[in-house]
Amino acid sequence: MWLTVVPAGGHHWVVVWAVFAAVAAAAYACGCFNGSVIVSKYILKDDVRAHGSGNAGLTNFHRTFGGKLTGVVLGLDVVKMVVAVAVAAVAVNVWLSAWGVGPGPARRTWLIFAKYWAGLWCLLGHMFPCAFGFKGGKGILSGVTLLFCVDYRMGLIALALFVVVVALTRYISLGSICATASFPVTTVLFVSREMAIVLLAGVLALLVIWMHRSNIRRLSAGTENKFSLHRKKG
Figure 1: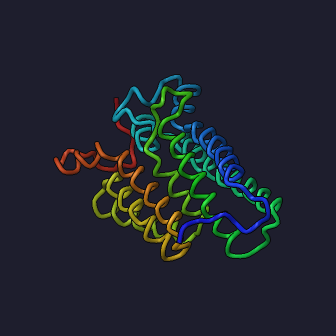
Figure 2: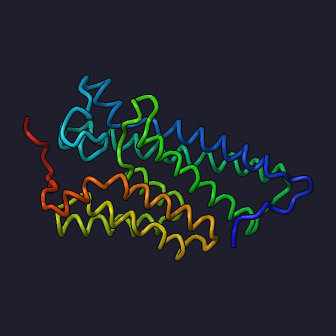
């Protein structure tokens, strides 16, 4: 079943698009607060994108700089997704209340869709931040945060897959890809079988996996870097 306009007199799709356009703009703005770039450029005065893989993500930051600031990067990338999802939930709750939609399946479905929608735009902001030349990270940390925001079981399954795969192979990229691939499956199992929501979950998963395409090539060639607790020495 596809999402439909909730039953309320005088409701119009223009209002729906306006609400979700505002949510998209706010979520994208949140995503642009890329922890790796902000910490490396403005605290360490050394852009992380000039080192290692050139990626503005937590893994490349840790490999390049290490130290306690890795935790700051992690915190920023988690918090921005939480904020984006919270803003979406508040906006859609206000909109639904204004149109007289009370608790029930319709309200729950729209709220779930809003969280996924905000998650998508937050990830796009993280991956392609307009403030940093559209060159960002790959989105795995913020993506897993989204799962916890939607349903903790989804987050736990993705995190478990990540930990197990990395423990067995020491490839963070492979763990990230496996964790991401679980998203559409756990959406169906725990959250919703609404077609629009499942498709959006698929888009989110494919987007993160596509951002790992260079890692996939290196994994195939056997040249991918393995995880180490220690930063690389210059």
